[in-house]
Length: 113
Length: 109
Image 1 (cartoon, each protein chain N blue to C red):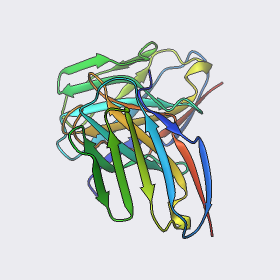
Image 2 (image 1 turned 180 degrees about the horizontal axis):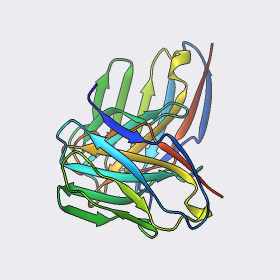
Image 3 (image 1 turned 120 degrees about the horizontal axis):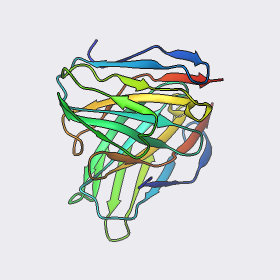
């Protein structure tokens, strides 16, 4: 089925560990983004990409890295996990950054202990 | 920072009733979108309304936009238990859509 695939669905990390959250889409969308969702705060943009080879920072980029080597994939790397990064992470894609609906993945629930 | 702000934060109604949720925003927009999120799932796009539109329908959904008041409303008619979810409005920022904190809708059977 066409859509956005995120892996893993759940992850527990120890403080200081690193990991990569995977995101892949098969809709040939140019725009991809990562959000984190915390209770009562809506979604906050971490990083985004308007096309392969192009990435930029969003509202809360500290502690995260991204790359976009292909149109399909947009992994999010946590460099050194901190308890403040405990959250639910969503990847989204769209034809463009605005003006079109976003397709979201099912999310990764991350706990940092 | 969040652009849209939904009101109320939570809404509880009986099946068959209508549900109205509101969204206010601060700066001018090109379009506004509404999304639904079921518990433990990702957001699902419901409807997009452009700044030059005043009303849009999709099935049991009706969205209005008043750019002079910087507000939008989402009406769900004849609600069902399956409509229980959180609903978010999103407005276009510079390079992304900005989401509010959402309205939690509970439809009791």
